[in-house]
Image (cartoon, rainbow over all chains, first blue to last red):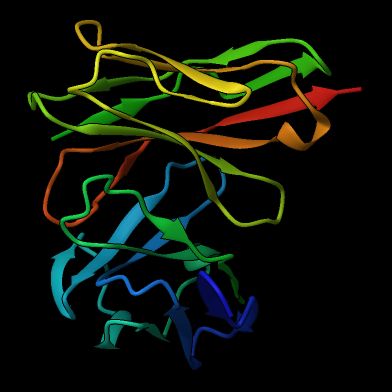
Length: 114
Length: 115
């Protein structure tokens, strides 16, 4: 596998379910990100992990819980979600202190909350 | 806080023609980085082109080039010889040169290339 992978690609869950999204990067990067992409809205940065430490949490509701066990893996744990949480969730990675600062994105998980 | 604005929600162009997508940003930083990302329908977001603010020369990548106007805080993307595969959502993004690559994105422009 190369680049950034995300599983599952599609997820339908009820409001009382608990599920997790997984992201894995194979690029040797040390910073990882979760974004939410809703229709007709800019990408919303949710969480940033740099060197496995959470460095940013953009006022995300507690029903979203990130986890970064190592520099290659990032999880987003979901529980008691709301229908408005339905969106495309994108994971990205980058190399800290790299001069170009570009991010590499995964294909996303399309989440539908019923 | 930095903001990025893309004022064209949708654009269309005929195959082989040239199209320009607009982007403006607001920042008090002097050193920063600008990017254009492409997100094809149901496909992965990929980097199209990047520009370092300290470089006066406009970046080019094959058919893609930018017009970077630092004083005006403008960063437009020009696509020459448009191809059907260029149909996608295009996002302009800004990074202030922090130690990790935090990006601020614009709202996106949907580009459709017609045969």
